[in-house]
Structures are given as C-alpha cells and as structure tokens.
Length: 264
Image (cartoon, rainbow, N blue to C red; front, side):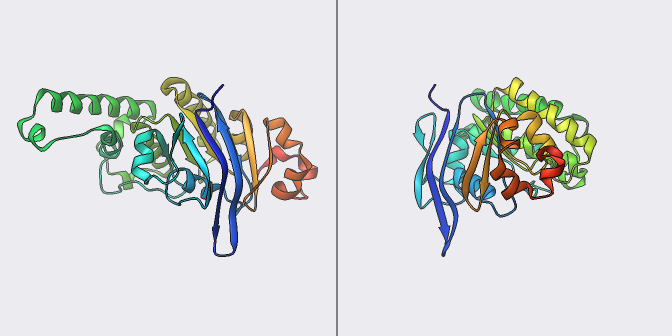
C-alpha cells in the first residue's frame, strides 16, 4: 500500500550538531503511530521539519505523493498536515469557539465582495464553519464553554482545544506533540479514548510524540524510537518495549528492573 505520509532520509543540522539524521517514516491512511525518545532526541525537530517550521538539509516529505519539503507552514497545513504543540499556542484572548473557527477558516477563500454583500456562497461557507465548530466542541467536551476566553480554560481543556483547532483545518494527518503533558492520570485515560475516537470519527491518520509510555504503548500500533537524532528502533509496542537498545538509551538502567512500560 502506498503510504499517505512518506518521509525519506530527512536530515538537519544546527551548526555542528546533527539534530536529525536520515529519518525515515511511512504512515498509511488510518495509522496511529508513536514517536518516542529521551529529551533532546530530535522528536519535536522532526515535527518542525514536517510542518515547515524548519527546512531540511536533505530528504523528502510527501503527503499523498505531493512533496511538502520547502513549502511554508500554512501551505503544508492546507495540504492536509496539522499539528499541536508542546506549549499552548492558543489565541488566549479569543473565545473557545473562535479558536476553532480560526482553524476552520484555513480552508476558505473569502472575497471582499462576497463578505460585504453576504452572497449565498459566503453564507454557505459561514454555515459550514459553524457546523464544523459545533461538532468539534461537542466531540472534545467544550460546547458548554464555547463563549469563554481560551486563557480561562483549565490546562487539560486547553490541550483538548488545541486538538480541536487542529482538526478544524480538516487534516489528513494530525501530529500530536505531547498531548498528555501536565495531565493527571484520569485525564490521561480520557485522552487515550479521545484520540481513538478522533481517528475513528474523523478518519484522520495520527503521529504522536509522548513521554508517558502508558499512553503510547496502549494506543499506538507502531512506535519509532529516536536517540540523538538517529532512529534506533521501530516496531510494535511489545517489540520496542523488549528492545535492549531502547531500554539502554531511552528508559535507562532502572527500567530493566521495572519494565519499559513503567513510565518515562
């Protein structure tokens, strides 16, 4: 099967530091894969390369056969690749609903004349944005807080709002950068089910960076492990959990006694 997202020999260096080297990845439509590694392994750098924040020194990124490397971030988002961030990038002084609407507007091509005259096409576009916004707010349990400012949301709700805004762009591939960061155990359990639901209901392919191994190993079908920018393992969660190189490089000596699923 031809991959939906295919990354080939992706590399970047900052000065003399090779941050990512010869990174390869293939995601088929509907995949839910994980990308893990210790701090500084290059995980977020990979996301920045995929989404146009950084331009690679070498390699190719293709989404449904279309090359993305070299495009600007908004062009990559329009092509169907969206992401969340480690630290919140919400529009803090806009409402919860307006944050989602901003994402939904990525797909629109408004004209000045249509906006002023409120043409049938303009009204139809507005209606589509409102319907998409309502559905996403309901999916993420935020409908009752739609008029609140984003900065007033509890941390866990802010993380969910970021996911909703990314989905509002109608991506084919969704990149989640540590969505469980800062969540308590109950929130993490709910997050697992939410990610599964998002894949099922929105038909989106997901690549997940996460330090919480209980989240990664319970929902991802394939896991790739980075260490100092180099891929050291790739396989199913049980295969990665039992890989001696992963235990040594990522989980540490103590993990050999508690098992690699015990935390990160």
